Length: 367
Image (cartoon, rainbow, N blue to C red; front, side, top):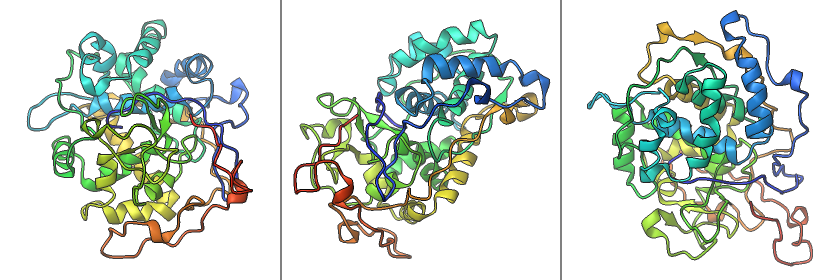
């Protein structure tokens, strides 16, 4: 969410503390979707198979993140005060306009890849955009099963520019924009879980495909934990304040100013902290907020619920526990929630990191 783009498949191995890999065994094609209870949803099954084979390659990688990012960038132009925008697929239908907006940088390849599927499968741009996000997230270990609704009418025009919150904006500005779209601070914190499977190449162009947390192939709580750590370094040049970069706790991940400040603001910090050890709540809250996001400006009575075609993503394994990295502990946390202390989590053992067993440098490959 906000302004960042592509990434590749993570090459980290699973450790005893549960570092997450996106290289899960592939499902057989017949397990890519469920038979729908409503026959009007049946046409989504061949589309799902095509997306998995040709776009996502059944991986929680670059195209999945772009699919999630596209849902936010398409729908968040919805404004109650200005009567603009909707979850209508205008990002696809009017891409020649909306892809010129700075906030949509990095989405051109994804949009170009996706647009032909709308005509080929007889589906509206809006239905395609939001269905693709639900399909893609099934590839991310620990992700929720998102709801799917079809029947959106064609978008009638492009969304206005300047409506998408960005990493350089203040918390006040972000919360105000989200409130105008109908979202509370709590719902914003829930939506930020999409950053658990995210990476950036726009904030520091010298280090493309840099993850935002240490487990970008997995929908887990490490994003909320690691954004709460003190920043000490930059993974690249460090000269990118104008793009919204602030110091990160690790050379292996990039940090956005908006994430940093949301983790510490009294209006959001306690819920942010709570997700560190409550993955089930994080899942449920994200799913609920995403259903709202994916149907903004639509008449729900006109839509068909096709959620049962979406398969259940793989659950987090019991070894995938919330943790600090080997170089961090509770002492490195910026305690921000005034109501309760940050949980004292275990630290990852250096024995679990290739290259660090003998005091060497961490040679885990980047994205």
